[in-house]
Amino acid sequence: MNFQQLRSVREAARCGFNLTEVAELLHTSQPGVSRQIRELEEELGVDFFIRAGKRLTGLTPPGAAMLPIVENLLRDAENLKRAGQDFISQNEGQLSVAATHSQARYALPHVVKDFRDRFPNVTLHLHQGSPKQVAAMLLSGEADIGVATEALAEFPQLVTLPCYRWTHSVVVPPGHPLLSIDGPITLQHLVQFPIITYQVGYTGRSHIDDAFFAQGLHPNVVLTAMDADVIKTYVELGMGVGIVASVALDAERDVHLRTLDAGHLFQVNVTRLGLRKGAWLRGYAYSFIEIFVPTLTKEFVASALAGD
Image: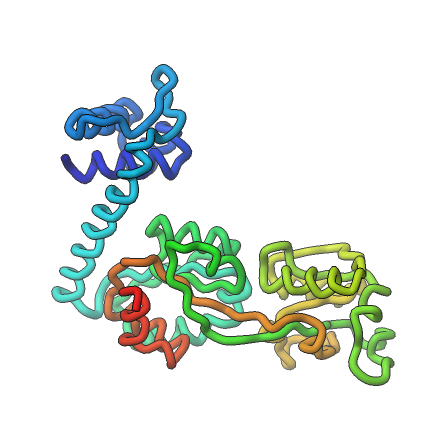
């Protein structure tokens, strides 16, 4: 039994049993992947996969039972490597952070700068994607730390810790009719205008939809985007009313827009930090987390990773 055999099995399951894709990921040939899997099956005396000719079509019952053990072995091997690196060179290495566009654009820049000032010899990789893509990068080991508002808490393989709470705001061009309303705006006011907001699954969009649905209202969403800057650009062009995260507003930059509070209209959102259960974090990874959220100390995060 060797790690290449274990990796072949794990990646075959992750890639939907597509051995061509597995071979590309492992930088080997498709016959090589098949051989590695066969050799491990012969050694263990059971088949991991159901086959139709030469194709893999699914996991056998023994394969489904043993796959978590394979994943744990590979995770522990990676943890062992990281632990050794931590003792050899505590302030050198790589850190991979996956975040949604909004978090990467508005929440993380100062964190990244402070981290780089403190750890100049650590190479930082910042990946962007949807909340589900962030979760996938954590689960695959591509990312060490994930930051997103939605979806992370839906994955039991992840430890998710609350970072901060935030609300939405409405943005309109100067002179817009909503600016002349006495008192707080309502959802009934908003449905009278075209709406520009986030794509489904991004930046609290589910809370926006839930609020309208609860009142039996059907907003005319004419444009969606992943990033608040894109939304604000089209609002400036007069295409509609924007609903964006309050953290995405900048008085100095958004001089051509006017802001209306919408904290009373939509449920409060919670940005979460995600970590893969059982993962070994380098010392500087704990520092990155604490720079981002000072209350998430190394002791607290380590305890959460340990399941306490």
